[in-house]
Image 1 (cartoon, rainbow, N blue to C red):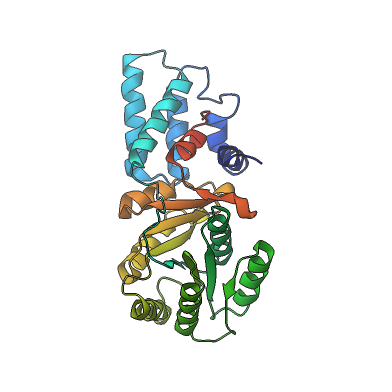
Image 2 (image 1 turned 90 degrees about the horizontal axis):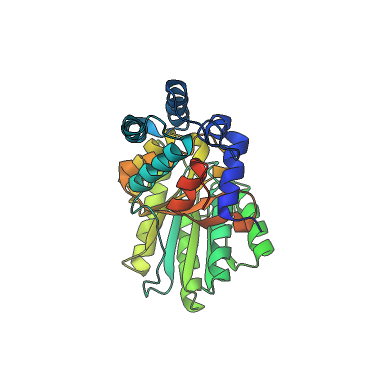
Length: 309
């Protein structure tokens, strides 16, 4: 099985040609050659193109230029290491780790817009916890989208995950209630709730999401214990506005970034963290269940800058 690092590298090679040209397997521009003005300009363009934003881009370039003043023969590889170091510093504290809290069940509510990969992520997440030995139940609270139930049922059967679901158009709060009761009665450690995809600008759908929270809190005043926004990594800086609105209206505690194997705009991950300081728990790097993996700052930064782990 390929490592997460390999998946990052392959994804960047396929979908971010500018980055790969600079930080490619053969060293690219930032390999064994010394830096020049042209390569710095190309680096700046690549960082902006990947949605790293003004602040992070400026910090990376400033540190590389400072090093270049001290060493006119600075190799591209050294510049790549500087870039990775800055990115790791920018993302310090961003790795989310789900530690057992003592709540039975511990409720994780996944929210986000349509198309972010939320439903498949819910199933993959439950599968990952199950493989770790944490007994898990899935709750299908996306009753708004006609195909959602069939989609999550297919995944649950494929991965052999217990599921509580209802029919299309059912009350999502009622499904959350039933799922919680089932998880509690079966002594499941984790309950993962998939909610309906909604545009962050649709007030009525956001109200439905708040209703799910109210229902859960009647059962357990501390639930949901985790509210994670599932973000499509290919959306770039648009993801930041999404996160801001969901955080304001629902109260987020973390992020899952999907589709990082097929985007040239993975730098938005750093922008979202800088904006909201929300931990990133998992990243999705492909279609297979095992492609959802815990987020690692070192893996991400090294892969971006073409360095070996």
